[in-house]
Length: 80
Image 1 (cartoon, helix red, strand yellow):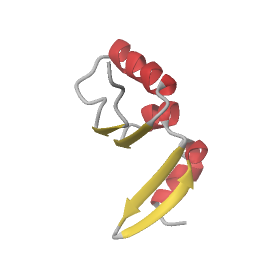
Image 2 (cartoon, rainbow, N blue to C red):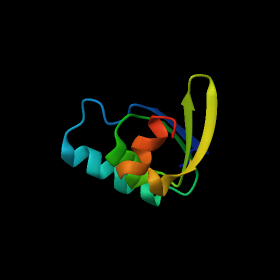
Image 3 (cartoon, rainbow, N blue to C red):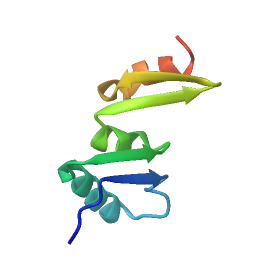
């Protein structure tokens, strides 16, 4: 079986139940290649991302994945 080099996931948690989201988080945590995720689900992003690229109003920002939760993420969204 050939392992994919990368996955591109667009809103992967939409329409999934909690159990399936947990399975996907565990699968991606063990996946050793590249995963590109487009999502608004901050809990999911916190669980699976090591790097984040935020695109807002035509600008691209790279931010540590560890600041997605809490007030720092909210400040980023507000442009502070």
